Image (cartoon, rainbow, N blue to C red; front, side):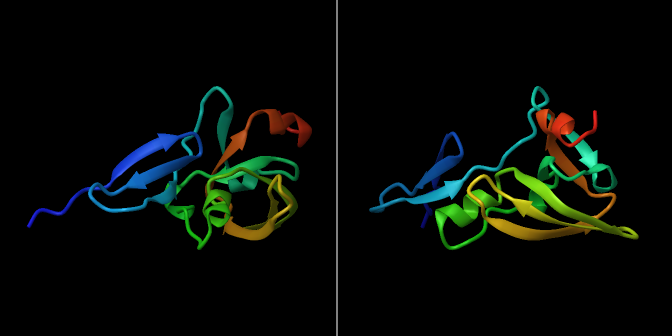
Length: 125
């Protein structure tokens, strides 16, 4: 018996997965891809407080969570606050536009997608 493949329709930040022949649909979140006009990639040891970042490795930010908001947070930029470096470990509190916060830890050699316009506000260029 042939299984039916879901159809993925991408619209902005979200995508709707529709399984043909079934009632209902589930909402999935599209993975953000780096935009060279607006973004630059920096390593963890180059980050500074005030930068808006997203992990460069898509595998490090799979859309997870029980709600759509939780899945969207993994694909949205967050502002670096309370940045600390201890040896090769980078730790910071990421803060989203809606005020949600989470602690992030990564190696100083990890890649990050950074919004170019946040480089100036963070005091770097």
